[in-house]
Amino acid sequence: MSHSPFPVPDPDLYTEEEVAALVHQFYEKARKDPDLGPIFESHVIDWDAHFVQMTNFWSAQLRGTSRFRGAPMPKHIALPDLNAELFERWLQLFRQTTEELGNANLQHHANTIAGFIATRLWQGYQMNNYPDKDFIPLRIN
Image (cartoon, rainbow, N blue to C red; front, side, top):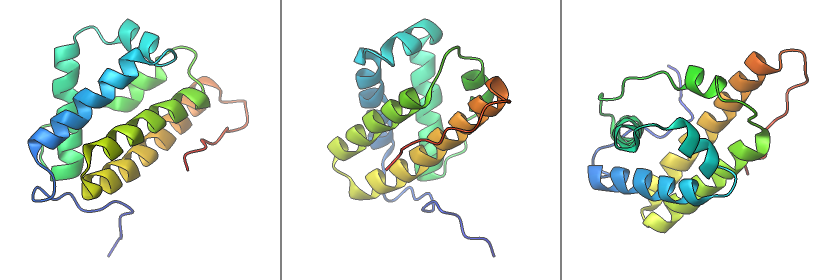
């Protein structure tokens, strides 16, 4: 039996409204951020569709729903000039958002997954874009 590092999704612990609030409040912060905002604004063409996609993603992670369809890695690998500090800033804003939502279970679960995602996307980005350079780890704690 394998043991996942993630809490098991539980629809009784988080509502769809909380998941949607997480997504909307996080992107409100990210879009205003001087470093992240320009990246999101130049690559997200349809914000309404992005909100649906991200809400579906986080609903799958937190509540176990199966609406998400997508492959995040190729989209992130294709972005130009990303660095560890941008992934760390993304994670910092995400954690600030989960704390503000006031649901300790959601905060723990979403932050655990967000740390894993940031690390995996950054690893994939480096392997694809800088294959001959030494791996730079994220400072996520």
